[in-house]
Amino acid sequence: MSAPAAPPAISSSAHAASGDGPWPHVLLAWPTVALTVLFLVPLGIIAALGFFRRIQAGFFEVAFVTDNYARALDAFHLERLAVSVVLALAATLVTLLLAVPFTYLLTRRPRARQVPYLVLVLASLSLSEVIVAFAWSLLLSRTSGISNLLVAVGLMDRAASWSPGLAAVLLAYVFIALPLAILSLYPTFSRLDQELPEAAGTMGATPLAGFVTVVLPLVRRAVAATGALVFIFVLGAYVIPQTLGRPAQWTMPVHITDQAIMKNHLPLAASLAIVLLVVSSLVAVAIVALGAGRWPRLALPGRAR
Amino acid sequence: MSRWLRRAMFALVVAYLLAPLVVVAGVSLNPRQVLFFPPEGFSLRWYGTAFTDAGWYRPALNSLLVATFAALIAVSIALPLSYVMWRYRVGYARVVMAMGLAPFALPPVITALGALALWIVLQSYGRPHTVVLSHGAFLTTLPLATLTVGLQNLNPQLVEAARTMGATGGTVFRTIVFPYVRPYLLAGFVFAFVLSLNEYIIAYMTVGFTFETLPVKIFASLRYGYSPVMAAISVLFFAVAVALFALVGRVGDLPRLLGADERA
Image (cartoon, rainbow over all chains, first blue to last red; front, side, top):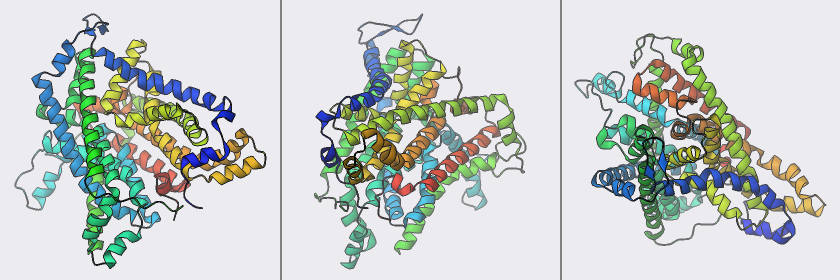
């Protein structure tokens, strides 16, 4: 069977919109209502909440004040924002450095050989951030961590505790981001023409040179999109910086959750969330633009038609 | 040379993904209430505790309940949406589609805060259905992605042939489309189910401790007292995820479900 034709060709082949009657609208009713109420409305509420006034007796009252944004943009929160973005960018970079070569090499394997790795990646992706934080806190602890292993082989004198701290946060960030990045890169990489790197090899390129000069330019958009996805995912993580980080690594999600739940200050939490949303979108767009512009333009070889 | 490069790369990634799990599994075997690795003995008592201590199995049951209904909701949104996108041209379907895919383009904490704000406004904060509905909408992205891939792979000529021979839209869906996308539907359901089972921040912000799910319980233990039971539970969770994904791999073609094209 040949691979898919473009969707518009399907629609135009047998079904004109005018003759469809009410069916598409009936089918769309539940998805439209559900996603509007459960996704769009909450975002609207957050946008409005940022201007409301907190009241002691309950949650908030409707008002139009700018104090929340003034606090969300004060020196303390701006510094937290900068720390959050830098940590997320660092984790994104490390994740891509691992995920790009791994996914490329994985997709060069026969399909049946890929399955166990895919199962491992899926299972790791689904692992609760809470369990990930727990696992890394053990792995980096003095009593049960890898430092014991390093002592046993003579690389260290005494077992040490590396959690909480910067290293723990970054390692766990990359751990949750890596499966997501691999799965996001997988479709593009597995559709790459197998023969391209081979052709490069025949023409005298080393495998590494072939990868950098032939493969990377073809997948740069997918890599950039994956980078943006991972960046947003890591930037929004709460449990990892909260449990594996010291206050110096407490990111925006920690402070947003703290305001929303512990301090019962929803308007401030909402304004912090909007600031985070704006910044995360800007950085994500910049990452995607970087992917679209850098290397010389080459068309992705089409899938077999 | 490139073969060694490949092996080193695979070993690195597999070790990275498995190392925390090895330590957790080791810790779960400690006979006493300590978190030593390597364990100072061998005992499965903490696995027993996970099933007999109401403090642990009740949150586990809550999580299973939430995940089942949340995954059903996710699929109930994703199936008609992806079908209309594939079959008809409806202007606003794209907008609905964008809403279905958008949750993964938002930092998770913002989705959670939105859910918290919504349920406070609707005055049902803390009730069990809130986490089910919010998880369902958040996780719609997953079945939406698998079903879109599945429908793209469905040969349109099959549908056209059926229609030429007089099949109505309903018959085409029942006899051709649905059987074809069933493995993609199952995969989407499993993804949503497993992710809901493991989701923390939305559950924390919608129901918190009033309808405690397992991740919320584990997080509380993480702050107020480690125990090897947490390790045992984590191992069980990972085992459930591996089993379900392996099942999906058995029923369907996992590389294709994840977006590789059809050539074998």
